Image (cartoon, rainbow, N blue to C red; front, top):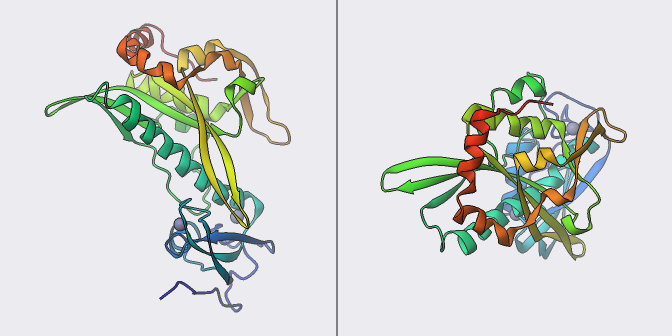
Amino acid sequence: MPFRDVLPQESEFWEACARHTNRQTARTIQAIYLCDDCAIRLTKEGFNDRPPIYHGETIEGFCGLCNAEKNVTLRLWFACVYCWNVVVAYQKGFVASQSVHDYWARSITPLFPHLKLTETGKIYISPYARSPKTKKAAATGITELDFVVDKVEGEQKTPLFHIELKAGPGSIHEMREFQLDINDSNDIIGCVNNTKLPCYIFHEQLAHRYAPPTRATVATGTWWTDIFTLLENRLAVRGRRGEDKEAGYYSPRAFKPIESFADELRERRYIQLKERLEKEPLTLT
Ligand SMILES: [Zn+2]
Ligand SMILES: [Zn+2]
């Protein structure tokens, strides 16, 4: 049976953002093409069990959540702009993370089979909720980022370093400045200090491939740096335009193409980074 549940007009959440748990008036109707599985998943995990207000045509195209090419159906929900941006970003997040897994399996595992990549910051779909702590206070307790790499020998597993993944439309070659929210750099700094393990930052370039009315996200390039090199390349900290968040701006020269990451592992430079971290812990911004 295809998923065709709809929110009744009598619901107290009619004309309210589906993702906001408390009633938040939103008369904006947002549209997305989703496969049935993803429509159910989004309803349950992201939208407080509030189904779409309408299911439209079913066509062959790319799912707006899982990115698979399959039968997808137009779904409409009431949602505020803020939440809709979060929802639309999930597809990109899944593709960026899959790209790291693919890179590891293709280029690292054959050379260093004992280095195991584990996704620790799995993207989970969730409703809108206010975070109880301030971001800076939260960063001091963080012990995991997006991925951790362990050295596995028999039963023994030794964590070596973290990887934090950032994704965006830009190529490092064409960027004037690499931008990273201060909240995000503080998360990295808090985590490396807490775990005494260094962190590499991967930048994944993402593009859209259009198959109107649907579109897929494709990963088109990857670059890497480490947290020390990144911070040494910080050019400025300033408020993001039109937002109350601050961001750090970095020289793109901090980054290298992903092809050179295998040399970093071959030289085991993460051990030097760990020693450096023990001598000089990083400070939150
Ligand atoms: Zn899907
Ligand atoms: Zn909302």
